[in-house]
Amino acid sequence: MENWRLGGFGLYLHWPFCQSKCPYCDFNSHVATQIDQRRWERAYLAEIDRLAAETPGRVLQTVFLGGGTPSLMQPDLVAAILDRIRARWPMVNDPEVTLEANPGSAEAGRFRAYAQAGVTRLSMGLQALNDDDLRRLGRLHTAAEARAAFAIAHEAFARVSFDLIYARQDQTPQDWRTELRAALDMAVDHLSLYQLTVEDGTAFADRLARGGLRGLPDEDRAAEMFEITQDITAAAGLPSYEVSNHARPGAESRHNLIYWRSGDWVGIGPGAHGRLTLGGRRWATEATRAPGAWLAAVETGAPAETRSPLTPAEQADEYLLMSLRLTEGTDLDRHAALGGRIDPGRLDSLCHLGMITREGACIRTTPRGRMVLNAILRDLAGA
Image (cartoon, rainbow, N blue to C red):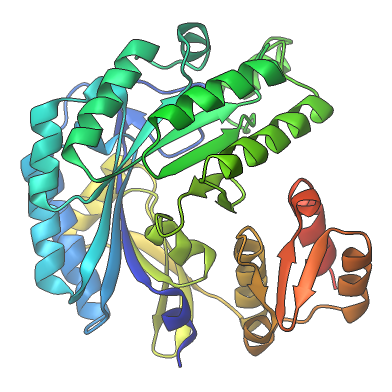
């Protein structure tokens, strides 16, 4: 069986525009006052046609409309995209079709139109449930608007997830415990809970370099908040299935699981990444990053993406890196079949230290190991 089949097949489409740029964000997002959505529609449909012709007969399991802020897309644009996708690929009977949304773009009519177009799951960027921290994070909505938007989304969609960021400035473990319990009172079946990280090239990184961004927790306090997150979500019936993602059993993000299980996915839109197995080789694809340059390339028929072949060793490393983030863990037989090698002595040492467990050909991180996952990955990949 081709390796990608073990991980599935999905499609990611990137909408690069936002109302404002959040200071912690290092995604490919841009603020634009005017957007010709018809022009973007033609470009997206052309790319769907091109990539579908390269992957005939593949059964599509998931679609993810990410960004940026895809809830700024007109519903008829979303409908046109999803109609073309359904026309070009066979799909499973119950495809998962996710759209990312921000509370400021929440309108009941708009959300119902997305659902009618074929969106089955909404992922909302709430990020915090108090106004002071929302302002610090550069968010345009208030906590009250976030709760109202979530209620609108819940009426329109059976599956709704939302994101929160913790380990924020001046946040105490008790603050996070209280906020997380409030979030779980709202949650339907899925939560993404991310520890604040200061990424290079962001406004937060510049602020930190100038001596600002004070009050960030130290490593011990951040680790305590991570443990609080695991304990409280598990007790509420939404345990972690990936380092930062929590769900009721059966409600995991099927699209993201394709990434973490090293499946294949089509990447469309400015800066979108993909993984495609074509002609017996696995390729890493990356679309042109700048929105204007991507749009111009598609319209003129010029290459709108670059492709790099992945060696067996690179595929094995990528599978290890992604799968060990999952509670289900890594299949060592699959890793070896890809060309990977892990020193048995390193595995034994990590097991002895209580960082990983091994059952047959499967290895998993322990709760203690998850807190130092990057160190474990460096150790195993360095074999």
